Image 1: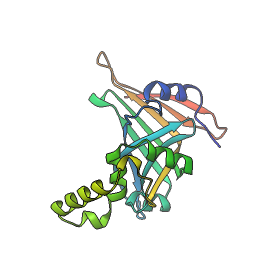
Image 2: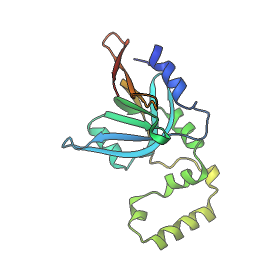
Image 3: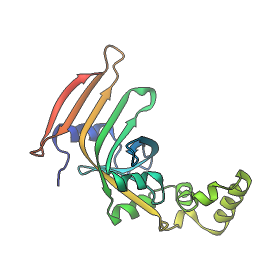
Image 4: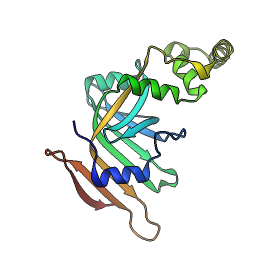
Length: 193
């Protein structure tokens, strides 16, 4: 099992929040459908470590269907003001049950309720009905104490390439890219911004 080590791990530690911080960064997750057409959407980075990057979603989502066909994935983290960007290419695999429970427990009450109610059936209704159903659920459930719904799932993205881009107001932007080699070491490449 490959892990992130050395310089790329040090940069991740400097750039990304620790897993115990409640304010999670948004990431773009890119997948491909059966015809190879790309798709992208925004989710929260639940956590990360030297094995990779974890995000969670609904098992009925399009991204889950696409990952079942092709586990190749890319994710991007963009900092406010376009000062930094991290792009990760890798392979997605099911997150372990401990990560699933921990990620759900760390979600805000709003996001816990959303995990329960963000369904295709509810999306088909008009806004008034959706809001009424939201209010009804909130009145009958303590969102802070909800358990994950049966459709709650997550993925660990194991990277094979990490690209760190940084702007420089005094000069040209810069990219440093780390590529996982066959011997499980990370090679470093400096690229034009």
